Length: 138
Picture 1 (cartoon, rainbow, N blue to C red):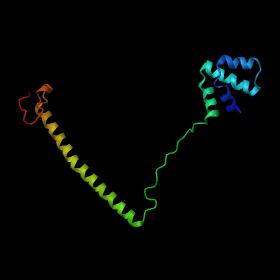
Picture 2 (cartoon, rainbow, N blue to C red):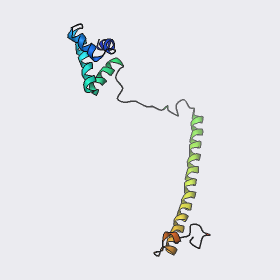
Picture 3 (cartoon, rainbow, N blue to C red):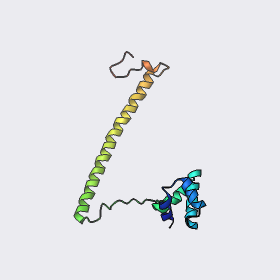
Picture 4 (cartoon, rainbow, N blue to C red):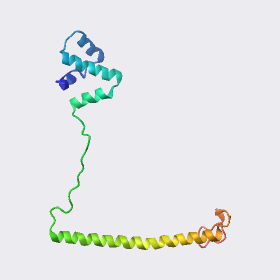
């Protein structure tokens, strides 16, 4: 019923709704809904507006559930074994990559420490060479 009254009166102006209530051209429930519409409009009461929209459109769900399909569902034993081998290979490659790059990072750290030890005796940073060939400090 409330949604019906909302729909019937939503196109009217505030003055038209007041006049309708004043002339008692509506039921008590319709008058209450119309007064609520006027109060929501005049005061900007978001709770009333939400209430009316929930009656017209429906309540917005508070929680949205997300689910991923099971990657192993419907797989045969052979397919699962193949997937395991692929995961193990990818893991091995990742560990190798990390190991190789960690050596490179450690070497870079040693290079920085060496530069700081050579040029870090209170000299301005502009005097530190920016490349290995730049020994003049320019």
